[in-house]
Length: 400
Image 1 (spheres, helix red, strand yellow):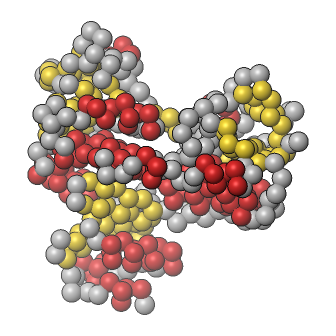
Image 2 (tube, one colour):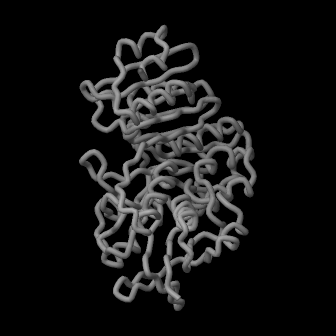
Image 3 (spheres, helix red, strand yellow):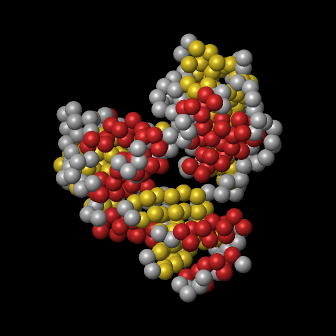
């Protein structure tokens, strides 16, 4: 009997099927994932799980018993080979699964270094899946030399874990500075100083020529002509939306799987949510790569699959844990032209403005700043920059 099928058993997929059941959908419901593990949290992989502070069972979003209790068919370790929109069928090899509606929560895929420059050598790792972390974990022995390629949040989080475990860590970033695509220079300066204080070497404006070694990596040739000896490498050079299945099925692709404001793709029976889905926000088509979006968008899509007919309007927020610093981000800083810095004791925050409009905040060990900034964004309010920069200002007064 045909029912709703969800492809992609990550945060978005798990949230979507749970919401469908919570809203009273009682027919056939199937969640398909290509990994063997049941749906799990990804953010702790490069932090607490890699540090050994979180056990495997705590990673899981829900117990496998939950899916059975909710009459959700969970198909794990079974990659989908193709989708046939004409017959409304999903194919897993020779197995055909019919659907009435289909949701694609296929996430994102890592960008890999080309094999021609050493990307396929042993000892070269990415940070995306549980299997990636399990494979690299034995490498984290004190004194080992690690090269991190890419100075984004994922690379810096891995560098922080390695430094805490006593490794010798070098981060290279081809762009002029770390966090160049996602944060202001002020936030990058703060994070650079934090890593340097923990013994990490950060080299910016420096690309990788190639990783060296016969079968296993043993070094790196850098774009300035220098060579460094290493024991292993972590590559964090970004991700691409998981849109291959959708594209092969003939769906419209536009910076990911193109959806309308409700999450519907170019096929009226197929929906999408999470890292793979692009949608219009403030007049621009974007994708949001965050836990918040994966959950909220998936739940909105679940409701719309059942006829709610409501536009999804995100309230973006993100976070990153590095050493003893929790960086919390509210809003999107795209288009900012001014930064206002607020510092009270050990708490520091950077507030992004475009003209007279407040866009976003980066809060370092400043939960109050984060929460006030988030509430201001949700209310569509812009705080007075001068009051914000004055450490004597009580933040809560800005909400009035």
